[in-house]
Amino acid sequence: DDGFRAFWADVDADAIEARGVDDPVVIKGGVSPSGVAHLGNFNEIMRGYFVAEVLRDRGHEVRQVFTSDDKDPLRKIPRKLANADGEIVGLGEVDASALGRNLGKPYTAIPDPFGERESYAAHFAALLKADADRLDVPVEMVSNTDLYANGDFDEVTRTVLGDLDRVREVLSQYQDKVDGEYVPFNPICAECGKVTETVTAVDLDTETVEYVCTDMTVGDETIEGCGHEGTATFREGKLPWRLEWPGQWEVLEVDFEPFGKDHAEGSWPSGIDVARNVLGIDPPVPMVYEWFTLNGKPLSSSSGNIVTVPELLELLEPEVLRYFFALHPKKARDLDIERLDQLVDRFDRFERAYFGEIDDEDLTAFAERAYPFVVGQTEDPPTEKPIRLPYTFAAVLGMVDDPAFRERLARDERHIPENASSEAVDAALARVERARSWAERTENEYDYRLQTALPDVDFDDDVAAALDELADFVADGHDGEAIQSEMYETARDHDVEVSDFFSAGYRLFFDDTQGPRLGEFLGELEREYVVRRLRREA
Image (cartoon, rainbow, N blue to C red; front, top):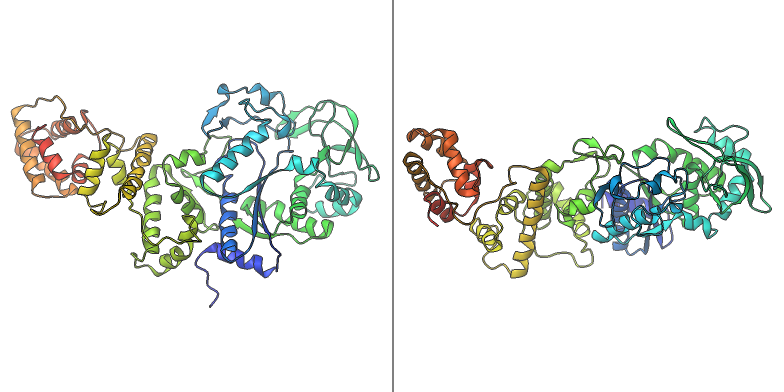
C-alpha cells in the first residue's frame, strides 16, 4: 500500500502498466550471434522473463521476444564455439574455414561450422532457445534477417532514408563519422556477399540504393571489399545499429527492454532520440542491469572467460540458477565457480525464508514474492519445502559411489527426515551428482573418492594403536573440528609423525596419501562406519 516492492520485477511491471499499454505486452531482448552463447547473453532473457511473469501474474498477456541481430557482419573469428549440446569447443574441432572465408558477411549467410543448421546464426539462436527451454522460459526467437526479408523493416527504412538531413542531424550528436554525405544503410554486395557501408544514391520510389563494396575497418584489421558497384533493395541490406535498434521497437511494438549498462551509456540515448525525432514513436520502458563477472573477471568470449547454461546446470539445480538472475539487477555480482557453494547456500536460505524459517524481515518479504517465480509455480505456489542437502555435504556424499550408502549417510546426519517419500529422497540426492561435478571441475577438497570397502593396508603397531585410540574418541560422539584437533594429540601421544598418522587415515578412507581436512571430513560421516574403518574392520 505504501508503494514498496520487495521484488524488483514488480517495479518494472508498475512502470509498464503506468504507460497504459495494450495487451499483448511485448518484452524484448537481443544479441548479435558473434560467439559462444554464454551466460552473459542470457542476462536479458532472464531479466525480461521475471518481468513478463509478474505481468502474467497480474493478468496480462505477454509476448517475450529475443532478436538475433543476425544480419550483422561477422567481424572477427571467435576463439571458441559451442556445439549443439552447449559444450564449448575450440576451432580445431570444427570447420573453422567456414568462418574465416566469410568475414564481413551476415551471420545468416555463413555456414554452420558444425554442419547441422542452415547457418551459423541459426546454430547460435538454437543454443539460446535450448538454454531458455532448460530453464522453462517461454521466449520467441526472432531473426533480424527474416524481419528484413519479410518486409517488416520496409517502412522504417523508408522513413530513415526519406529524411537524411534529419537523421544526420540526430546521429551527428552521437557519432563523429556522420557528415553531410553519410547514408545510414548497409547494403549486402551482390558480388561477394559482404556487408558494405558505402551508399552513393537512394531511390525512394523503387526502394533501392546504389552502392560500392568498400573495405570495412574492424579495430586494427581491414576486411576488404570487392569494389563491385551495384543496386540493392531495402530488403537486401540493413540499417546501422543506432537506427536498427529503435527500428525493432517500432516493428515489434516493444513495450519493455532490459539491457546492459554499456548500452545505457551508448546507444540508448541515441535510440531515444531516433525513436522520437525520426520514427515518431515512444521508446520502450528501459531497465538497465549491471553486468556480472565470472571468477572475478568480465565475461569475455575473446578471452575465454565464459560459462554456459548447460555447464552450470551440471553443477546447480535450475531453480538455483534462476535465483541468481532474480537477485537485484542493479547490483554488480560475481559468479565464482570456486565458491558456488555460497550461492547454493544463499538460495537454500532464500527458500527457507519463503517457508517462514528465517528471522529476516527483508529476506522473507523478497522470498514470499519472488520464490514462486524462481521455481516456476506462480499459479500454484509451493506449500511444502523440498528436502535440500547442504551443498558441501552433498559434495562429501559425492565422494561415495554407492547410492544406498549416500542415503544412509544423509539420514544419519538427519538431512533426510524418516518419513520422506522416495520421490523426495531422490530429488534431494540429485544434488549430490551436481556437487560432485563441482568438486571435479574445481579440483577442490571434495574431489576424492571414499572407499566403501576396506583397502588392503598394514600399519606399524604404534600407528595401529593411535588409530584405535582415535576410533574410541570418535565413538564418544565428537564433531569434526574436535576430531581434527585430536588427531594431532593422538599422533604425539603415540610418538607417530603427524604426517604419517594423517597418511594412514587417508589410506583407510581414500586409499591415497592425501585428501580433504580429514578430521572435519570424518565428522560428516556416519559415526559407526568411521569407527569400524579406524579399527580396520571390514
